Length: 138
Image (cartoon, rainbow, N blue to C red):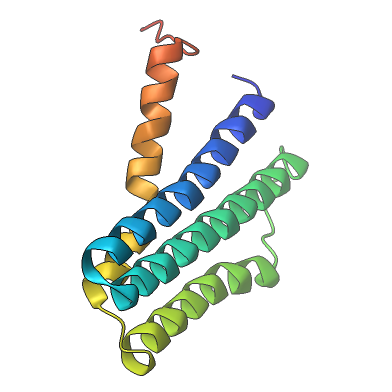
């Protein structure tokens, strides 16, 4: 599998998270009201943002590793560590604000945050149905 195929998979997952977040918010709004819809939408937005930042961070680490291939000692800049942990800290603060200050329903926010799970399952189903990748076994 070449890098452009991985990038296409990641972009489809990213788009699926966004679409699932919109659908989740609409269904939640129709069934339980605007506050639940807002919680689901904000949770899904954070899920999308987290996936996007994680994807870009992983790409940076891979490029760094490839650039230092064969080196006796690999140097990972502190800024890379700061970005990784900063991403988590920012997400935790955002969830705290959503739950404590906006007082949106926690279950709705968690459902939105978990939108990556069905997005990955959709991608898995797409890959299996389209027959793009076959396991050749050992």
